[in-house]
Length: 304
Image (cartoon, rainbow, N blue to C red; front, side, top):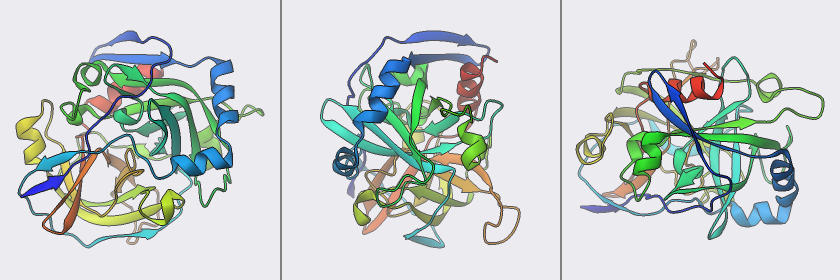
């Protein structure tokens, strides 16, 4: 049975990319000047942000047959300061995605989907990150972006949805006026490498269909391997979950392995929302597999 699946469309280019070698592969970076990032922060007035909330830079079709059991697939409103809204600009105008502050040495990195940053040979413009965005409020301010990183594999395969198994990106934020880093101000979540594809995860995002993308939502689902994506797309087989989120939730973290029942501690990020599709009245999301790729990008951004 056919179903909708997000695909990846082009975003406008800014500065050129630079390849950086790594023992695990290579990554590409788009560096944003201080003037550009300051202009982006000024650009996103409340009115412009409001118009961008409902649009995600992805939409498309996927046909598959699958089944995933789950514990709570209907999203509910939640607040996590480490998670926030990404605003960006492409050839169609403003759009929004979701990102997560991750626990690294620099405490300045935000994890998101690569299609929110780069697609069809073009980099996004006017990107900012707003932790814990809610109903237009910015309790931790607006963070400027210093650089955007994707893998070389994503650069080669980002046309259409062919590169979905490499749909991971890192944003480097600038420090605030007082020299503080984003991870010091809002906290950060550890990234888990080589997670079990079968488990239970909490998925966070800002879906445009829920309250116009103005509030953070979460849903809980069991996960399983995305055999369809593994069969038809190159790269490691990703993960599949059942959750009713759509435009605006791209890049949102999949958080699991809490230390106490009910999620009393931070947990770890072992996936992120890449694509989605409805099937037989149910809604599904996919994530690229967190094998070597997240670590490659983190090492590249931090010079390791």
